[in-house]
Amino acid sequence: MNTVSICSLRVGDGLFGIDTRQIREVLGTIRPQRVPLAPEYIAGVMPYRGEVLTTVCFRALLGLKSRIGSNCILVFDGEQNEERFGLIVDGVSGVIALQRDSLEANPSGLDARSMELFDGAYKLLSGLMVRLDPSRLRPSRLAESRLFGRSMQEKQGEQR
Image 1 (cartoon, rainbow, N blue to C red):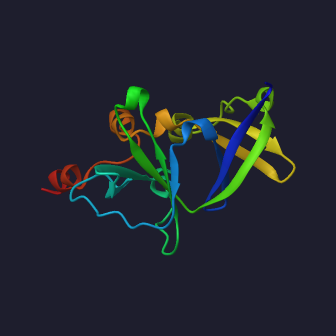
Image 2: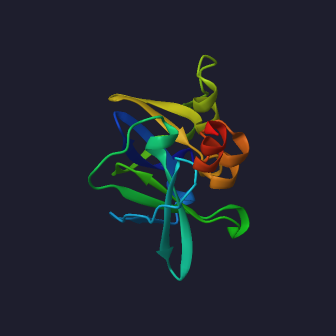
Image 3: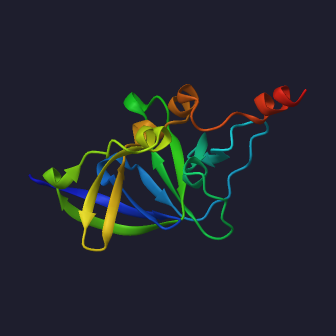
């Protein structure tokens, strides 16, 4: 099969897409409980099917201000179900089928943060849709990269 089903989602003015096979579930508006001293990109934790689910705020990863209003949480399973997490986005637009070979690589001029997050782009009639790879958005990987902000504890240590 030469097509791939992409879940399109919006964050700010940007259009992003994730392969639907990588998404476990899409939840409606839920407000996670903030975690003290967590990095800004950690939106918080929430109960999910008898577990505690860590949520990542995609707006924070993009350097956008937080948004008041409805949002969606996409739930992902990590490799071999090691790290399940949620990604908070402004909204989900739907599912579209795209040619697998229409994905273009990230341009070499992207900044380090974007290179870390983005996995290429599709050219659509309405503009670009940036593809996301959930494995790049895992909380543990984001913490390892050190590109996405420090925890409040680290910031407080610098002020002393």
